[in-house]
Image 1 (cartoon, rainbow, N blue to C red):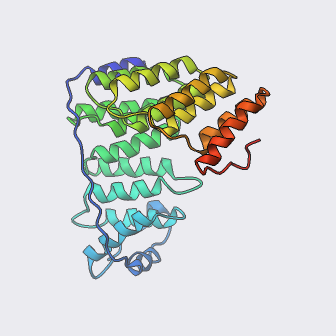
Image 2 (image 1 turned 90 degrees about the horizontal axis):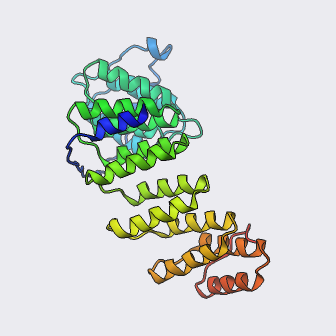
Image 3 (image 1 turned 120 degrees about the vertical axis):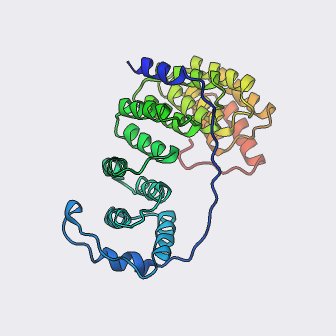
Length: 310
């Protein structure tokens, strides 16, 4: 069924829309948030609206700044959401999206289900989501293990006239990979390229990570060649290191060393992770001379060994 959803979504002639982000720095006024946060009482569902601040615009700027700084717990962003929802006129979806982005980064347990609930509340109250908020919601569904909901949301987004962008598609790819649906992820990547939506390094990185995780070195190397021939950028050191690590784990040292030489020939300098992986692989097979050569190269390039490197 997921394959049908992917096909139906991409069988539409859709152009890619790019959005530029501009950052503004404002002076933070925490007293506006904290003062009114303390005036809430009861549970989330029964909290009452209050007259928040003397200067609403200054409060909104403070919220933006707080979202950039992040949150340590869920209490403050919960209160901010209900406070923003009481504003009249209500703030745009952009500010709510900034809040949801910050909430999704709370560690160790981001309130993903609550973000989904808040998004649904806004939509039911007439605040239409934009591409960014849909991307956040799709990310929440994927991290909750509900990739099917994420694809349904994506299909609804397309029907409303929004073009798909590389960020949302990369989110869906990550969700498929995390759910061990690599074949569907490859299908989605192929559809993406055919429609002229250029994958980013992050997109390719997610695919390589997924393929190498299941030990599909052949598929990963095939994707590397495809990327080299079609992508407007070179594979980076992270992608090469991921492939080399996977080859070493399967004791395919000749292929790993060949890829190591190839990346240097392409002007990609290995980092400490790349070299440490090769040293570990060579030592595990008793190839001490090869390990010494890699170690000498690390020292020549002023790279520091990782403590776990044998």
